[in-house]
Image 1 (spheres, rainbow, N blue to C red):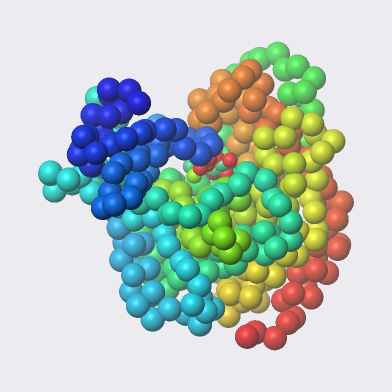
Image 2 (cartoon, rainbow, N blue to C red):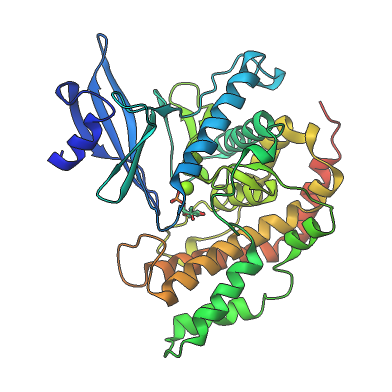
Length: 372
Ligand code: GN1
Ligand code: MG
């Protein structure tokens, strides 16, 4: 526990009661720590984060969204939806500074804030089985159910063009204009994108035609952002709420499925192990639709196969662009890390493309089920 971290943590909780500060999670953007302290009788914890202000340029708006989300969820949970069926459900809440009337600390140009820690629950980077997949789908479905009636004008757009795939393609084209010698792996990745330029606007074009609408979204509901109760194995809440903003729920569904249905995980080093498991996909969608089907339109359902293919393609494109740009966005641990991450997503895209007719049939079958 360094002196500097302890001094920041002291702004949220008295230093003399803090027993440990340790790194938490595997986020690619922010720095996250778990602060443990003595509580009334037992040990308690909260999560302290340094927001990456190169990514979140207006962190105060991120905090405002978090506040609006928390207030909305409180109102909704006052009369829990029937789908919650007495289950546990929690979201991280803002831990304010203890002396000043502020929700965050600005220190040496850094932006620090704290949120509550969800106890007795855990996340994993890799999928375990179909029950786990079903719970991950339920978790996202319950999150969408609770926020779909939060008016989007109450949420700031904290990350302009986040998940707007054609904008990522534009950025990639700009980066590629800088002359550079590409090795064979880079050339293969670029060729993969070149073959898939058509249709990257599938969701944005549907939005422009009015077939899809912006709603509040999570923005990053990947497998390790869904908390699972350690005893029951049930999803109890979503964490990492910084990307909550207006967007298409298809970004969320695609992101959840791309991260849950590749058993090798997004950090896989062996490409041969990467693939798209349709049974896991069925389990995620079943869990999701059991809760969320009621507020989905037929256009929403129509674009499910597209988003399941598009979001891994987009993430691969984002990793590849960052690699070509010198790793300025995603944290990396070794040279070529972002290129490898891109290759994993591209392998997943290829496998999804190969199974597209079966995926379409699956979604048709699940969509045709009667709404509860
Ligand atoms: C980033 O920082 P983290 O790990 O929560 C990224 C997501 C990507 C994800 C891939 C704000 O999320 O969009 O899907 O990495 N977040 C941002 O692991 O860009
Ligand atoms: Mg995130």
